[in-house]
Length: 193
Image (cartoon, rainbow, N blue to C red):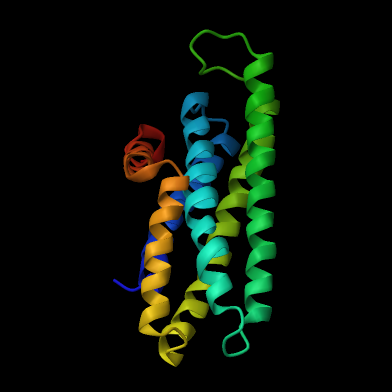
C-alpha cells in the first residue's frame, strides 16, 4: 500500500469516528442519556487516533514531503488550518467533559441535566461536520497526488518508514489497535442503533 493509500484508508476510520460523534450528538439533542464514559472514549479516540496519529502523519511527514510539489503549498496550508480547527473543537469537547465530571456526583455516571448535554452535543456535532468536510477535501487532494505521480517511489518509501515512527510516537501498534477496538465498541453501543 502506498503512503497516500494509507492515509485514504485511515480516512474511512476517521469517518467512522465522525459518524459516532454525529449519532451521539443527535441522541443528546433528543435528551437521551449516553454514558459519560462512552463520550469520554469518543474524546480519547479523537485526540489519540485522529489528531496525534493520523493528523500527525500528515503534518510531520506527508505534507512536508508534498508541500513544494505541483503548487500544493496553498492546499496544505488550508489543511493545517483545518487540523487546528479540529484540535480546538476536540479541546472544547474535552473541557466540557472535564467540567461535567467535576461538577456531577452521580455514582452511575448516567444522569445529567439537559443544560450539561447541549455544549457536548454541539461540539460532537461540530466535530462530525469537520470530519466530513475535511476528509472529503483531503481525499480529493490525495487523489490529485496519485494521478499526477507527484511522489517518487523513494519518497513514498520514506513516508512509509516515517509513518512507523509516527505510530510509535502515538503509543505504538498495540495502542492503535486498541483505538480500533474502541471504535468498534462504540459502534456496537445500544445508542448507536
